[in-house]
Image (cartoon, rainbow, N blue to C red; front, side, top):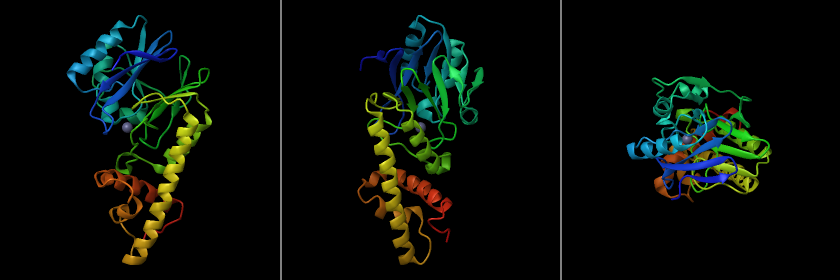
Length: 268
Ligand SMILES: [Zn+2]
């Protein structure tokens, strides 16, 4: 793995090893090289990776404006306060993210929808996590996507941890409408055909939602009561390996909440 490397003009990539969801093994951290550098995804909990990351960050020959966390998950935020303290720079993130991560000793700077960080605009994109943010450079049409999409791994929507399927789909459509030319996900290689990827993500989720709905209806008829997510998964995810069913159950819960809110299934 060659790191760091430039992925698009003005953006350097430094992947770090993290305890993330397999098959992914690393989280992409980015240096946004404006007049002030923003370091995105202070991710790794491992000492050797933290040391390598810090050496990289300290080698950047420009002032550092802060480290920014896209959302609260451990494979994104677990060095947030550590790196901010080590570099003596503020930690940037959404207020809902700061509520859920360790921030001791770090100077916190909340960012909100529409804020500007140099050439980058902050987008609040809930769905995967309530405080999730993306960054978009309108001129270069480049999107830092966090965990809204990934290249080669799955995005979880855990309702028990702030996941919201309706919000996620709405935000995917919004990101698609940006007509980015490059999307930089937190996991996997840069995405060169964002329209195809967003289109696939939206279609795939809606296809799964239809399967969840059909499974709910058939189990409802069979059991004489509203089925649980666990009773739906074997039907709606029959094409998915069994070891992924715990993730599927969480996604099914998220679909059921959306379907209930839309009045497409009943509570009982
Ligand atoms: Zn995440």
